[in-house]
Length: 62
Image 1 (cartoon, one colour):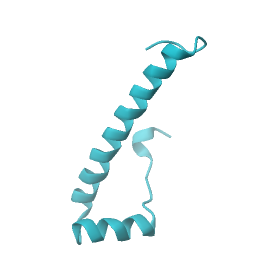
Image 2: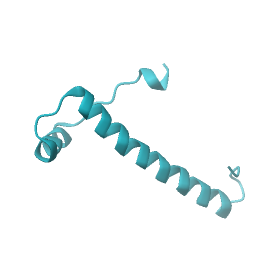
Image 3: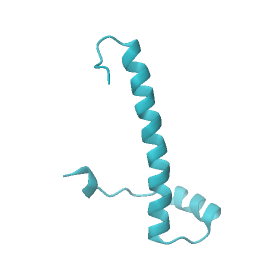
Image 4: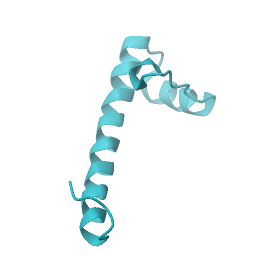
């Protein structure tokens, strides 16, 4: 299965928190919010990986 075909299930706890922050939101707005936060998280993971790669000789440097 391709990654783009995967479905993320948002927990009831997180749905409740999102509703508290944004009120009732549609699927398009929810997708935009989640993807924006996911992009930031991926950027941070990539940055951490680059720092880790320089500190561990067995990892391939990016």
